[in-house]
Amino acid sequence: YELTMAAGYHAHGLDRRRATFELWVRRLPACRNFLVAAGLEQAVSYLRHLSFSSEQIAYLREHPAFKAVPADWFGRLAAFRFEGDLWAVPEGTAVFAGEPLLRVTAALDEAQVVETYLITTLAFQTMIASKAARTATAARGRPVFDFGSRRAHGPQAGLLAARAAYLGGCVGASNAEAGRLFGVPTMGTQAHSW
Image (cartoon, rainbow, N blue to C red; front, side, top):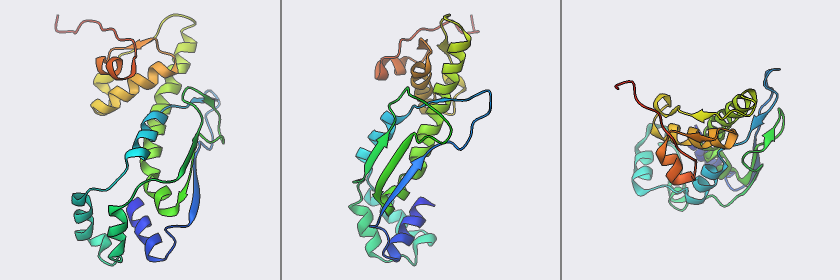
């Protein structure tokens, strides 16, 4: 719905108005009173490189949801870049319920379009980093390793989970690509096929 909202803002002349969106958690369970912020690196990269290809725009032009959208909106998409402001807590920072992890101030259409990506990127990695921090705390100084890539929701999720787990307190991961890309110390065990 991010695109239908952006199209609606444009149709009503609201798309260039400034807006501020914040990402925060309303409440946490009593036994989980903090989170560890993670995912900012990927969020910044997304915002810096966001654009729409001619193929994506052509698809949207033909989509029934956009039949009544003014034609100049598609031209706006062709030039679309995130030009807003981003504020966020540094990765690895403990955050609490009601405390923003990230704030975007931008033209209303820009702030709307980036919402889903930012929520999913920070929510997933913050969840992993927070679980890793609780696990590392419970381990009382014993090393904890991430070996979750095989059970992640796809290769990218496994890679980012390894990064977030390291950020949250794991001393390493089994994901070699996390070592190559992010400097996460890597190690492995042996497969059951032995």
